[in-house]
Amino acid sequence: MTDATSPQAFRCGYIAIVGRPNVGKSTLMNAMIGAKVSITSRKAQTTRHRITGIQTIDDAQFIYIDTPGFQTRHANALNRTLNKTVSNTLTAADVILFVIEAGTFGQADQQVLDLLPKNVPCILVINKSDQVKQKEVLLPFAREVASKRDFAAIVPVSARLGRQLDDLQNEIKKSLPENPPVFEADDLTDRSERFMAAEIVREKVFRLVGDELPYTSTVLIEKFEQEGNLRRIFAAILVGRDTHKAMVIGNKGAKLKEISTQARQDMEKLFGGPVYLEVWIKVKSGWADNEAGLRAYGYE
Image (cartoon, rainbow, N blue to C red):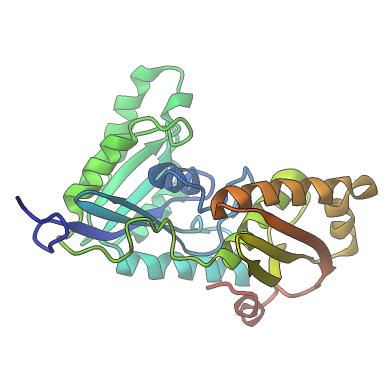
C-alpha cells in the first residue's frame, strides 16, 4: 500500500482565487474548506488582505489564497496596495482560479484576465450559476469566455449553495504538484486568532451598517487574552469621521450592540470556546490616505 503522505503520492500547492470585486471569491473559498475564514458582505472590497484557507484530504492539501478584487478604476493608496497584494499572490501560485459571475463578462473581468500569468494553470470558475434562469445560455457563455484563454478546465459552480464544488476540487487536484503537506491536517488557516477576530468584527460592521460607511473603515484588536478556553477580546473600530461613528453606534447603541453580539457568536464557532468581547469606536481621520498608514494598520 502506498504511503499517502509521501512526496510521490501526495499533492499539495497554492491556489490563488482572483477576479473582479463581488464575484464571490471569499464565499467560494469558505465553501471549499468548509469553514468561514474569509469574511463576506455585499460591499465591494470586503477582502483587503491575502487570506489563506487550508483543506486537507487523504492524498492532497489545497492551500487557497483569497485575494482582494483587483481594482481597475481609482488609483488611490488603498487600491494600489490591494492590487499589489493580488500581483504578489499570482507569482507564487501553483493554480489560479479565475472567478467570474455567470452570464456576465465585462471590461473589468477582461482586465483581470489579462494580468494572469500564462505559465500557471488557470481554471475558469463560473460562479452564481444557480442565479441564471435560462440554463441554456450558460454553455454559449462559457464557450465565449473560454475563447479568451487556454483554461485548464471550466467549472460552473454555486459557492453559496455548495454545488459542483467536488468537480472543482477534482480539477484543481489534477494541476497541483506532487509535494508533501505544508500544514497540519486540521489547520484551516495560517492566520492568527487575533487577526481572525478583527476580520469578523469588520464583516459585521459592513453587513449591519450598510453602504454609507466607507470601506476604508477597519478594526484593531487592542487586547487578546486567553484563560483556559475563554478568550477575552477588546476591539476598536476605526472610522474617519464623527458622522461615521454615529452610524456604527446606532440609536441608543443598538447597532454597536448587534455588531458585537453577532461577532462574538461567529468567534465562538470558529475558536470552539466562549468569548468575552468588548467593542468600541475611534475616529482616526486620514489613516488610510497613504500607503505608510495602510502598512501601519496591517495592510499587505
